[in-house]
Amino acid sequence: MIDIPADATVRPLLIESRSAPAYCCLIDDMEIDDGLPWYHDIYHFLRLGVYPEVATAKDRRALRQLATRFVICGETLYRRSPDGMLLLCLDHASADRVMREVHAGVCGPHMGGHMLARKIMRTGYFWLTMETDCCQFVQRCPECQIHGDLIHVPPSELHALTSPWPFSVWGIDIIGKISPKSSSGHEFILVAIDYFTKWVEAAS
Image 1 (tube, helix red, strand yellow):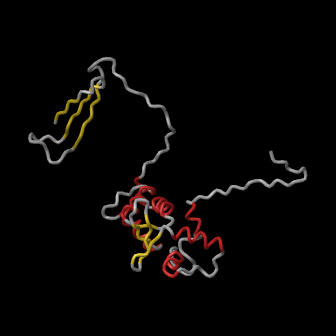
Image 2: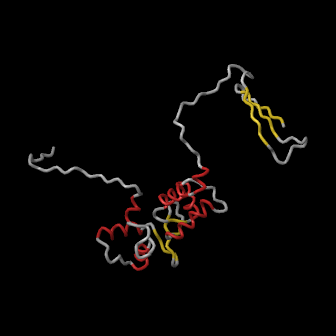
Image 3: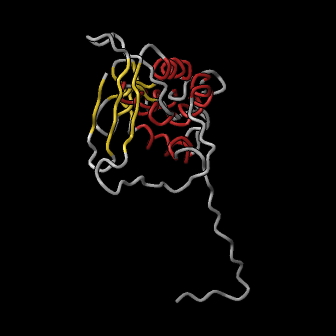
């Protein structure tokens, strides 16, 4: 048991909440004020073994820890992914182009922010604030805001639709118009399902 003097001052423990992943906090901004990319210090440390001139001892330690995840091939900086894949490091302008192409390009399915970040990583690209930037990019996408689901209904319990015996309750749906037409010239399909046996009948 530890004895604490009566006149001792007890300072409260301060816990700081951050909205970004911890590794993003090692570098203040993605783009430095002088226009250099976010990986400028990492690249020069790996290439020349030098620290920034204004770096403190804490900054140097953080830079060494961060640089262990990166590798230079030729003149290009890559980040090692957990599965051993090398991800090309992008600056801010290139990251915007990649997000726009993957999200809304020729084959872009307008996926959500987290899925967009994972797909970009599978494509082979990386920058420090990927998830945050992708989520903000999706929120600014006009098509996603226009065609997105509007979920304003409060949650409620699901009510199962039961059937007491076979063929007492049916569900009927119409599919169409279908193109091309059927061999008999029909353009619609009538589908009926028995709720008890799950028996399906379909006719054009």
